[in-house]
Length: 124
Image 1: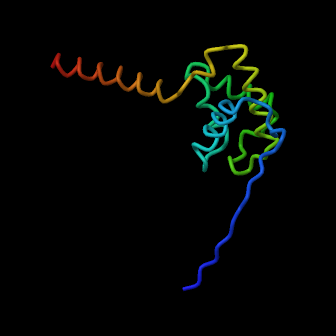
Image 2: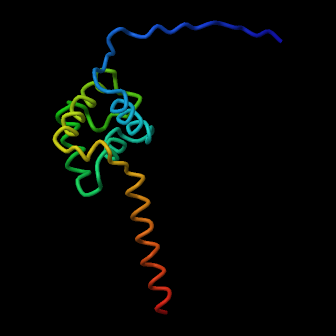
Image 3: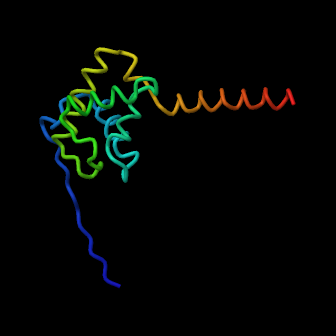
């Protein structure tokens, strides 16, 4: 059996293409690719609490000039830069936004539903 081997050397850019904190860029990229076969607006919606999800996602996409029907793999570095820049401004306006994690909201809703279900079960 013949095996080809290669060495790859990465050199970091002196100036990143997206001039935002790494944690912010990572959060945006992870959320976009979370639903990689869906439209990008689906994953971006997870950046926002459920009560403001539709409005904030629409605002983010509009201000970043990104078509909501693009799939994650169709987004360019320029798209991600715009999304990160706009999301940063939104986080500056609402400081609690960056700390928001949709999974925590899901857990809270699930436990509330479970408590309600358990209460109804005991009444019967």
